Image (cartoon, rainbow, N blue to C red; front, side, top):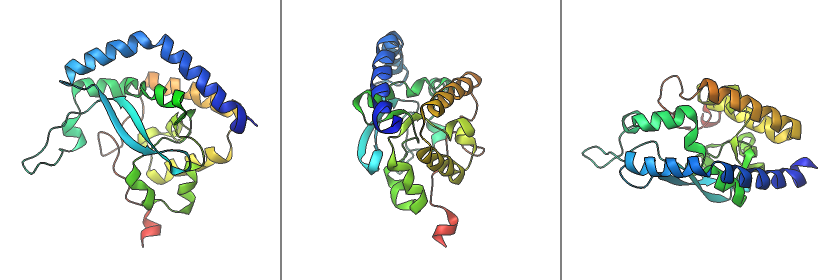
Length: 205
């Protein structure tokens, strides 16, 4: 009942309230971001949502657009600015996603929305993560964030899909606050962000 009826209502109410309350911070970060990034402070990208329907995710930009001599974007760690690192460490870069939640493309809690090009790389079980709206935070984020493997992330995502409850969502939100305050799990062990998902090895053999 909660997942089908009340979850979306709560998302709408809470995201609207958060946008109003946090509007001064959103305005300040928009202005500061425009100066720090030398232009548009927002990063938008198509992501798959519920039932793999494509929507446009919005975040604050944390990386510049520097390219090599061949015109290819430099690696994430070379484009991540000092301001961007601070935004990521505080998770403030995620605040504009409140508008995605308000519009119904996302939820406060759910599997994180990943890249569209990952869709054909999922196995059947991993595709199940798209049975619910993607979230600002989720079960995988409170169990390691970017410090765990893709396979472990997807296991947590599917576990969430199978066990959506009000108390479960409240617990994930509380744990998320703790993680943000401790600034843990921001990067993987070998990358400034997270390595690209190329598919689960067992499936690709």
